[in-house]
Image (cartoon, rainbow, N blue to C red; front, side):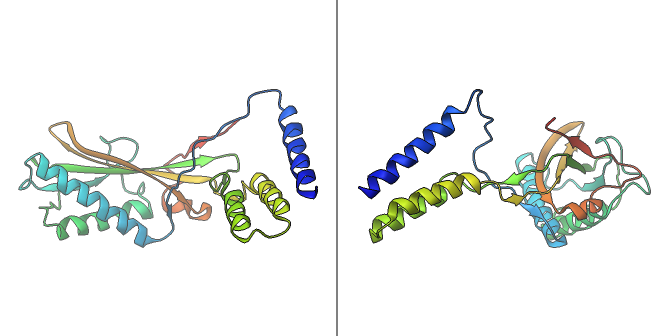
Length: 226
C-alpha cells in the first residue's frame, strides 16, 4: 500500500499546485544553447568561421580575384570608427580577420580603394537589467531517475521519482547567465549591395564587457523585463 500512498500524495500535490494558478503561466523558449566568449582564441575561431563564409560568398558571386578591405564600423556601416572609438575587440578582431583572409588566399588590401570589396564589422553590447538564469532541459533529472529505478527495481523507487520531480521544479533555474551579451555583425558590400552578412550572438563575462564597449563613445543596448 505504501507505493499507492506515495502516488496519491504526488497527485494531490500536483493538483494543489495547478489549482493555485489563476492566469496563464509565462512560457520561455525551448531549450537551446548559446556560446560564451571568454578568450581571444574565441575571437580567432569566429574570425576563421566568418572568413570561410566570406570565401564561399566570393566564389558564389565570381569575385575571387577582387581585393577586399576590412573596416571596423561604429554605429552604422557608413561610419568607420574614429580614433579613440575602437575597443580591444575592434582592434583584435580586425587583425585576426585579416590574418584569416590572407591564410585563405583572399586578396586583401591595406587601404580602401576604388573597386575593393568592403568588409564591415561592428559589435553591439546588450545589457539586461534583470537577472537571468540558464535552465537544463525540463524533465531531465526525472527521466534519468525513472530509468535507474526501472533498471534496478529498488525499494523506494516512488520516493526517488517524486524527489527528482521536485528537484526538476526547484532547481530548474540555478546558473546565473550574467547580464551582458554581444551581437557581432559582419557584412561584405559591393556596389552598395550585400554579398554576405552574418550576425553572431554570444554571452560574455560581465566583468569583460569593456573589451567590447568604449564607455566614452558607445552606449549599450539596455533590455529590461519591466
